[in-house]
Amino acid sequence: MRDPSAPDRLTTQRQPFERRNTLEEGVVGGHVKVNPGEIHKSAGAARAIGEDFTKPYETAISASHTAASQLTGWSVTARLDKVAGDWAPVLAGVRDRLNKTADNLEVTAQAYTANENANVEVWQKQKIGEAWEKPAQ
Image 1: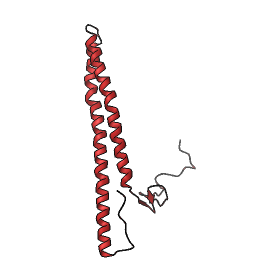
Image 2 (image 1 turned 30 degrees about the vertical axis):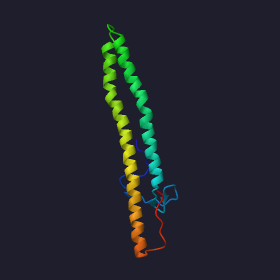
Image 3 (image 1 turned 60 degrees about the horizontal axis):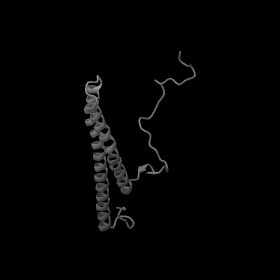
Image 4 (image 1 turned 180 degrees about the vertical axis):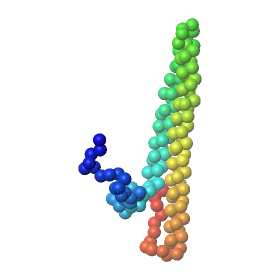
């Protein structure tokens, strides 16, 4: 049964988008503030996670294949080998996705910096606004 004191969702007017004007980190006056250095750090973190992930997953797959080969005649041999074979491409895909994410973050940071530098040069040539500085690399 519906609570009679609750607002009727069909008659309640809501705005489809809400503009936020906060002073949260990364948001200044309703606009997103981008720091290419932080994007580079995120790329490094993604790459490090991918590298750290590689050895344990390769070890697990190798150990599963080894165990399966040493359990000849046991009923679990085929299933253990199948599990290792099935998981190998999945785990490699996770590692590859982390590396691709790192590459994409690097490209994004470089493109953002290049774009900002180009804008600053145009503004400086046209003497628009105050003295503009190029963003930190």
